[in-house]
Length: 517
Image (cartoon, rainbow, N blue to C red):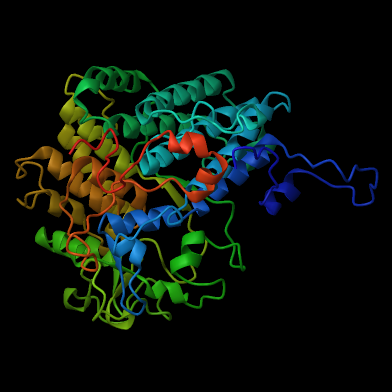
């Protein structure tokens, strides 16, 4: 997968809009692979990234936001921690997508499209971080070299993290040197439509994510503070209010062309509910934490009441939306909670006939929670205030408000329920009433990531150990949840020596470098 540089363009609508083909031209060499322009391949890579929904699904389970209904036999790898090197192979797909972006980078200058290099490198940083957070040491320096490194060596995960900052710096330099998309290529930027300023803000927020992930490592404090100060000094800034990072090629109500998450756990193109919609369920752990702070309005956006959505009244539950009708499932329980008697994943992400919602890459809420933790840990760093007063409290409260906006809680209930929560006097909700400010940030971030960024939520849980999630009820008494996943059998077969050089890794006890406890 690290050799793939000639990528077919999946986005036919974009291709047909941006070029023409002479169907009568027969003077083509059948032995030569066709090539595509970097902007189309950038579009393909972005679209494939957001369509890869199963890593976020797995993360939603392992961070105890979701579990499963008992309409299905319990999923052993997820809830019994029965894991091997054929489970959860996200490796091959992610490296294949990285190859798309590398093709765009390598061919950008020669094909007169240097403006794609910055966005392509930012997307690479986004995926490389997910890979190292899943597996630990990974091919990074030697990756994507094609025949120049048929069996790429692995980089230490600490070095990968430093390399991610360098990669993002290089991306920012590319954007500075090539500050405008050609009008003819803007439609290939499925994220920002050719707005490179927004790409800079996304890159800076990714830097925050990368740096805060390492923030509990004692010997990195000086490095992190220095790098955070660089982010704070960039006049373009980070993602601000309502600046979620999303992508869409123009989803349509046709088979294979709808929003991938909608198609996976929602409905088909005709509005018929997918059988798999009966599988994922919000956990009682999630509900209990929301109810503990009277955060029931957001609960009703994260989940439908028992029995799910009323197909004739999209966005509303089949039964009355009162708290007693919301039925979550104990984490990992294997019986007693059928799909028809429990709550479905809610209107924050799934509404019948809304097949064209944009897919999520990063939320504005996460950006503000990252700012809050950065300011709380490193008070001497002065970040731009954005819509806040520039304090850790201000960033935290805006993060909560962004979550209420994104879930549709504000628009659904009219009043600013976020302010009610933020002045509730409740620990882990009201900043002033929360003795441990970091735990308040972590809790509200965990809630805000629910339904949107499950993989990020699992990584943050491993980093912080908070909230203290329950053990899966389906797991054996002596079983422990994984802290990483195995290198896949495909990589073991094709790059044997370098995989074995990583040593005998215990995925249940050998923590990643940023997972200090």
